[in-house]
Image (cartoon, rainbow, N blue to C red; front, side, top):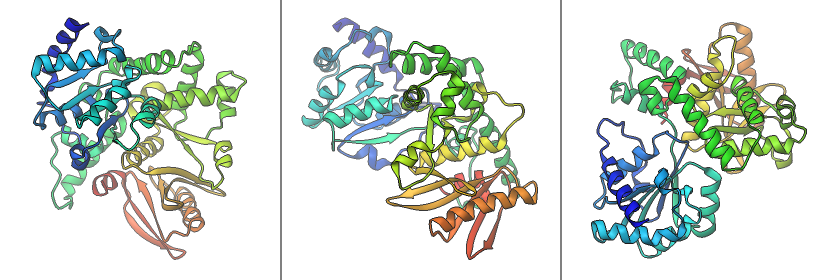
Length: 416
């Protein structure tokens, strides 16, 4: 094992070069704090690049290892002490450690706790939400901060396209047109870094299969591939539409709704999709009511789902949802007589209501969207709300409420 570790460490250490990579955004106070920094997110969203960018700016950079390497398949908790000794043998004593995809090693948190107690700084990445939460909560409570990384934001996407935004956030007519065109590209192709660069659908297929088989089926010892595939296909084809566990069970042909609930939980742990509950003060009602499902990236929705026509409205809604997640919002939807796409909870109350609509193509559509937003505003005693569209922009006053209507791209750039 010792010689294998030396080979792996030496080869992986060449990965520190991040030239040509888009700088990912992370608050500096998280990087510079004394606690363990845990970076989590879906596979291939840029966690390793972010880790390398952080590493490049630190005074000590050598104690790095990526556990998502087939040569480390037999690595266990008993080998961590050897790993530490190899690090010191190769590079001398250092106090900053970088562990990529550490959740692959059961019991890792015990070793990390020992490093932390010895006043070392540790940076960690991982791709499984529940495993990280369980392990962090068991041995590292109060000793870490967490940062969830998502695929490119629209601002990062523009940076990748080498488009420079004006410093004053005032856009000329020409800039408006160019940004709108870039946003249409972003809406269609999402923000998974390598896919954005290469537009290789085979890569997207391999990413999906890697997550589905390695992170969902193998990790959770599932054997019914057909049920999982059908579930993913149906959800991707009905993105942002409410569905109950019972209805989904019927679609994939299982009798027990707990099976569907477990499947969705396993998939959600990989950050590939997210479930949003209807807001209710009763937790039981939240469980029973239909949930809306969103995907981590629009490119996956396009690849996995089936649609007779391009559904720009649903893609817009999915894009807004991921941006809200990126901003750390606690998200629900509202539905009574009308529906409002997103209501944001802050503490014990709702603080924001947001409606998403591709276009006000006719007065009926416009009134439906306004009615849904107004109902949410009145229900939660809010004075103003937001409607995000592809291009419309205006402010209206109705029933003593202020409704701001702005393009999604402008909201994403001006409010990040």
